[in-house]
Length: 283
Image (cartoon, rainbow, N blue to C red; front, top):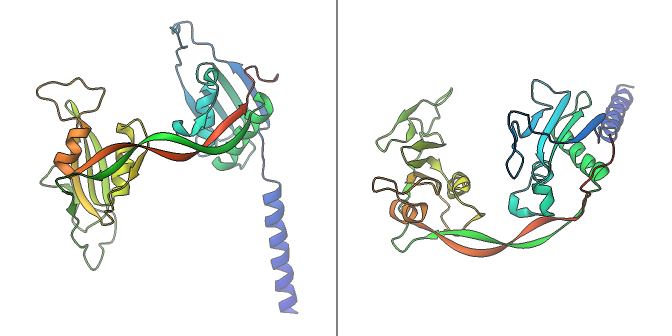
């Protein structure tokens, strides 16, 4: 009797889980789409000025029941499809026409579910049709410089990890270090430059930290699989070069880490927009 009862409960729970999955909300309850109008005190020049761009509100914020997007449709597609800019092929107007979209999010929806609702809205209101295909893009390959790698191999961590949060102090090279061998990475602005630090980090971590300093994807071709401690200081492209300034990234990588960037071509999966309407359907 107990076995039959337990089996019945499990079947009921399974059915409830399946029903919940089937009834997960796939679209917003209400959505209002308008062309963005800059405030009177902030007239646009060329491309319209945007006072508050991006996504505000939604699950995980102080306003979970309402979400607002202000910006281009291209940026919205990149956000809700979780793409990098080089992974999208779309008409030029999707990057120049700006919209304000305010939507009511169903109660209890997660952020992933909300992103699915945005995709549904793009399909229903803008007629978005897409397909995925390989796209050849310009990349940088991170390789070993002629001088050989200069990354410092991380020391072995203590046999017994320390309980509680790590205690970070400034090391001799100016980077944060943890006395108990914890992994960590950091970035920071310098007068006229930029610093990247790593403690017990991989080359993949270094590439992640460098993405904001380059204009294309980075691919690891170093063959280095260990964990390393490093510091990299360089001048960002936006900073004016002076006699006192830091070296460029191209110069800093070989000199400080024994690595270099090689321009190359690679294939990535891209989202191709086949159709999208410039004028959305009515609210």
